[in-house]
Amino acid sequence: MSHVMNTYARQPVAFVRGEGVWLWDSAGNRYLDGLSGIAVNTLGHAHPRFTAALTKQIGTLIHCSNVYQVNEQEQLADKLCELSGMQEVFFSNSGCEANEAAIKLARLYGHGRGIDTPAIIVMEKSFHGRTLATLSATGNRKVQAGFEPLVTGFIRAPYNDLDAVRHIAQHNANVVAILVEPIQGEGGICTPDASYLQQLRQICNENNWLLMLDEVQTGIGRTGKWFAHQHTGILPDVMTLAKGLGSGVPIGACLAAGKATGTFKPGNHGSTFGGNPLACVAGLTTLNIVEQDRLVAHAEQLGQFIRAGFTTALQGVTGFREVRGMGLMIGVELDKPCGDLVKQALARGLLINVTADNVVRLLPSLVISQTEAQQLLDLLCPLIKEFLQS
Ligand SMILES: *Cc1c(COP(=O)(O)O)cnc(C)c1O
Image (cartoon, rainbow, N blue to C red; front, side, top):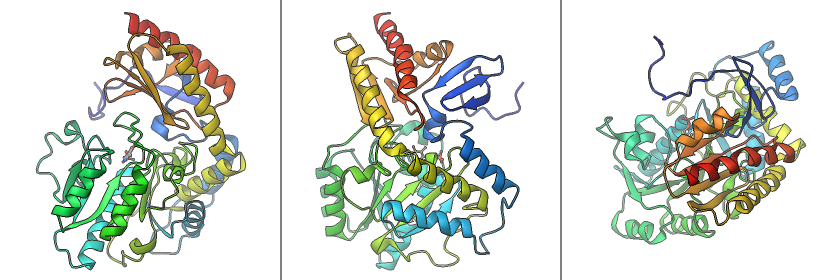
């Protein structure tokens, strides 16, 4: 019997080695990785330059403490701010912790404005993590059930509904921020109207609220821009990152700009591991390789290629609804629950994920080649067709 706590319904396969978009299991079978550990392995597996940089850092300095200067942290913060236009960064170890930092920052910002019970607007079908504050912010009852009492101070609005947000603005003087994903990942690759973020920016400006974007899944080139909000031309006050930032080494970040900067003072927040030299070299090396190899533009191109491939193969097939997403964050919506596809794809050597019951989700590494993208389509399209016809 396993001594690991039973928190995941795991597939019966264990991977022992990877290279690029390929993984090998303990029996020697090869798989095309269309999931990248849920948008984590930005550079694929065992990327030679990434491996070399990390190996060097492991032999130099893994960890010191945040009570000292951490040069690698300064460098990664500089690079993230250069790429995003944000101004300062707090480093954590995960996405939920990055969002915890954002939530704490918003509350502190509110208290600074004389609001004793600050509230944050969050969305239906959102996902922000599994800590008590972030599961309370999450718009999914399954994530919350059994963990009551929830953290208070969140007001929920439907996603992509500006009138709902304006209504809250008129009726609640305690709101200090909006926390929202530019594209809802766990919610089913839901892309809002093109002007949604711009309008939220406007509402935040009018009310002196912080616009806080959860880019934990959409960040680091995933959607064909460094950060998904860059498709819209706006700048958030707070942005959170994690998944793809360290290419597999745990790291998260909470970035602030404009009126959100300078909110935290020494003693307000912290993390033992957050932003240690190893994690920051993983982040820096990821960003440098993505930049040098022009992987953001590559993600845009390959995303278009894959989405066009799905449309061509599945158009008119009964039960296929639509393919959506941006860059290499892709969802294929079917008209029925399709969780069984995960096992069927695995049996054919392909790793995919299903989210929101009926959306096949693909988050391949940014290093995927066109040949490999075609292989992915050749494996998955017939499988979806068979599934819909059965
Ligand atoms: C995955 C995810 C999180 C949580 O990240 P963890 O590292 O698992 O804590 C938060 N927000 C979004 C949008 C995510 O996709």
